[in-house]
Length: 208
Length: 208
Image 1 (cartoon, each protein chain N blue to C red):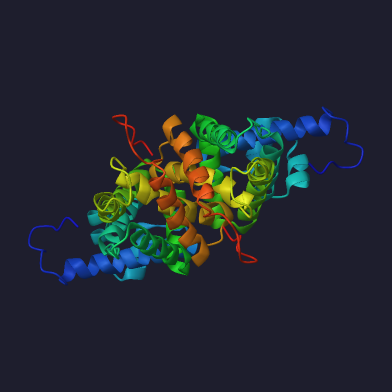
Image 2 (image 1 turned 60 degrees about the horizontal axis):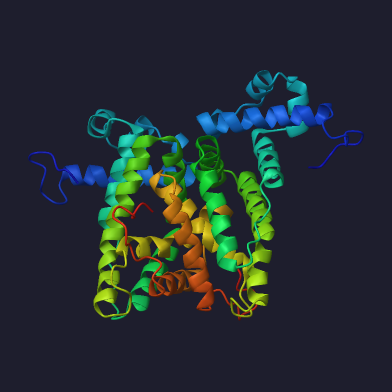
């Protein structure tokens, strides 16, 4: 978070205001969607002055961007199990749990939906996933170092390959993926990585 | 489409009305999103009587459901190249082209976004993807019959695995996948299928 001068004390008033406002924003997004997010309403529900909310977040998209930044900060660190398959299974299980959680799953669907019609939210989403991918990339790098995966394997492509089928299922069917789907996502990513599908040979070929 | 009695003549007035209305609905979704879809406005832009539109589609979600049904009907048939990798590469290229097309890509993002907050749209989306998966499933079945993939491979899981990374990229980054991403999606699905990841051994384990 970008702390304002004089507000670095953890748990200070500014931090408490942010926590309360982001909590309400997340609730509104999960329960009603992006279209129902309104700064004055969020201020009222969070019991925070309207002026404070307008001054700090400026707009609904500014609020959603900060919520995504907070979600990236709060998200769990990677698991290290000693094998790339074990690590990516843990990653898939974490993604599945998040998407299957009623509040979190609805929140992600709402934010992704908002990203479809709002450029600033799309940019905030990209940053969120960049943080998540960077957190888990070392599992793939270690897999390469251990000789489990071919040299040149692009860590970001592998990490994104684990998440892709889980998000795809939720977004196109409305049904959260189950445990079997999570295991399959990790196994498929590793099988494809072992086969060399994510070895990047051309410069700039990391567009996924 | 469910033709009304006396309206089965292809190209007849009812068909022309449907074509005009769905065209405008798609334009509005692609350009402005679900929140801006309004039956009276669609009727005006399609130069069709408001009463006709209300009687035939009933609601905005009814209109979107019919649009998705039409998109499923209009979508291209599968390609048969003689190998499962060739077939799935053709599938991935088709999905990529659709998502990279400015109108179609925006339309899919809008409809998926709408599915996040509307149950009927989510159901219509599921049906759309069921049709697409059923169209391409025989490519996987033939791959199994030719001995390219293990017996028991679930065709729907493989076809969905091809689409997943392409949709995931568009929905979480706002950037359409490129040709390299499409090839990688097909190659990854085949590599995982060859490794047995999509072999379904337990009954009911097709929840993805």
